[in-house]
Length: 470
Image (cartoon, rainbow, N blue to C red; front, top):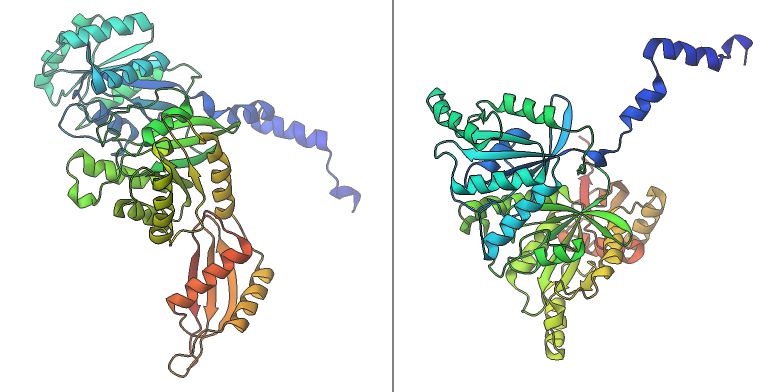
């Protein structure tokens, strides 16, 4: 290399400093851990418009909303941003004084969100004014010592501003007059929230980072109980009433000395069309949660016979292309006779997913919960397996030579070339000179699994037919 091609490193770095400033400081600033997002909790009585306000802030209809009190029950986190500031927004259920049963659990979740937040947004219905329950929430907020932003919701026009001004009596400062439905005043509210945010908080972003696991199953199968067992706390509301969970709940779980994002979802009904109101939207949110996940854990009630609903949920996971783990819950209720029947049911009804790892657990007692780690790792490894093209074609040619496609219409389709185009799930393209029947494609899939594994993952086989020359 000629002398003039060499560059003085010190001179180049000095020139970069002059042009761009302190590069090391900028790199350090860009590499700030996203685990320190500030947390903003939305608190208020039932049916004051908290979830509608959440949807307005995050800019999409993600929180389930219905004109009935008590739809939101758990603490549900969303990633939000305004004017370049990112924060974690927490929607909560309606807080009620001296609540009992499920309502008491909902109130406890709201109080925990209040205690863990960096900023609390207190929402009051301006059309009815401050009630005794609102006064009780104010006393809790003062004990917590958290910064509070008071929101007078449902101020749809100038006529409602007079009613909202009466909320000065709560002693929390100026009420921000907002219409969650129409967006009126939401910009000023977000400015106030961002100004109250600390530089760092305790929230975690769901973007990237730990692997994402969705808990799916029919209603009352034990998904929320399992999440509470994994979280070692009462993270979500659990009740014997089917359909307690409505919104998907994300929680960071430490399992097997590693972090995982677990997503508790609403129980999937027999048919989405049969659901109404918030149950219908909850089913849609469950599908969206599955699309966000990398692996799905389908919980099955081991104490009851396998239902059409169970097989339909498994088929939904397979069609979505996510890795799959089958968890048979309530194993503590099993006896020897039920175990024999269960094995027969699995052989008969789950013949389409013999490749899915199985684990027998009990969310109530914690039995074998730790074994889920190996099952999840196995499924994710199969989901991300890639086969070299040369080895893949050698194997496919060997299989096709030993078991050629049947002759149809006097012609025998042949596989000319095969390649794997993607992982997650493993997807293959077969270049052929004729159409391959579904039975032969299933045969190829079975042989691929026997040779390369793909445990816990669906496989996609696509065809490209060779065009005839004119």
